[in-house]
Image (tube, rainbow, N blue to C red; front, side):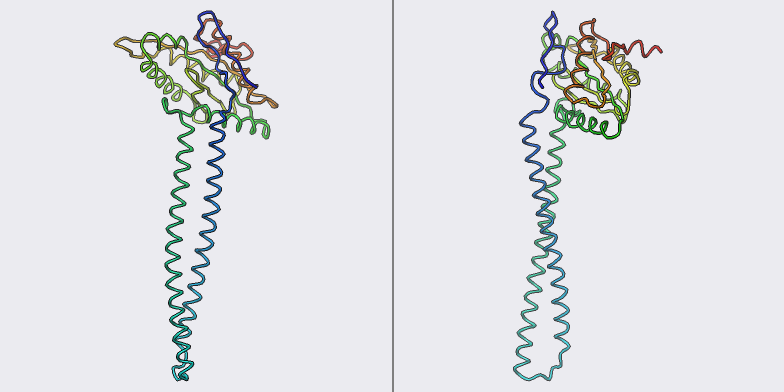
Length: 297
């Protein structure tokens, strides 16, 4: 399912559900390639370890045989003595070869471990928004699917909030995109500082952010959301020698069993649209609840 952007008279974008589908095909293909590479490395590491173990066991057996040969009575016939000497030399050669192979396998194991570490590092980087340093849309999609699956298994509710910086286009138009980026980073820091330890905050795209509140009803999440809104509203963002005030609008929805990721995003996005339409600088629930009212209770 694809969600389309809502419009309001001043043409400012107000919907957090962007035109493109939730899953980026490039990211999906890259994830699949990364998983295939990691699976291959795991299989290779297993094969190397098995060979290394076999090599070690073989060396142990050869050394035992070599020790046994040293104990053979030296009063052997010339033919047997020569055969014994040939066998000892061959055992020594195999032991040396196995020792070299063991070292090479150990180095290969270390190389595989390093490759796996690099793949994991790249995977983490691919889930972080380069501008703000918080999780990005791809990471959000993954976590949302995880929370929905957990809800289906355990009935543990969670609440989704979509946020949009009010009048952000004016910042870019008036102060330039570099200063716009500073606002995005500042807002991301405030959101990250306001959420609880178990909450998940991400940049959804553009000037939009998303927060997942695990094990939390919409009513409970409203209090956290209101603190976040107030913190942003009272912050002075210094741009071009002047203090700039920014505000957030948000929409919240409590996920219920049977809801898909598209559906919960659509419901929260509808609440965000109402918050924008109703004057901005407010966070509304899907049922019309206002975070400002909840905070007064």
